[in-house]
Length: 76
Image (cartoon, rainbow, N blue to C red; front, side, top):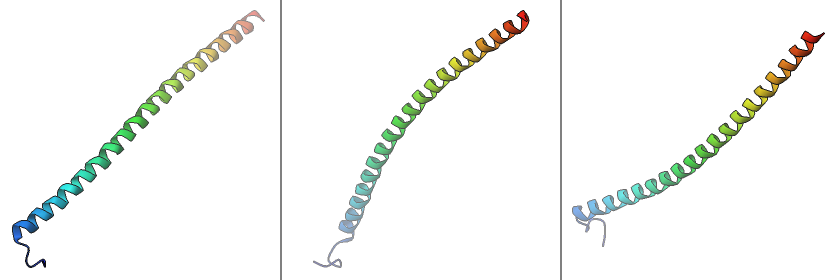
């Protein structure tokens, strides 16, 4: 059966099936990409929290060192 023998409604149905198939593939790809991006975002947020905590610890240590230095300076 040649393409000339295929009726227009069947051709339209075939085209629609291809479009639906392409949409399903795109949807699956986007779902996976979204999952990966959410996982990456979670890792980055955890990393940011850890870095903020380290920064606060370093700030506290520097403040303590400055206080000790001021105390030593005042005693001399």
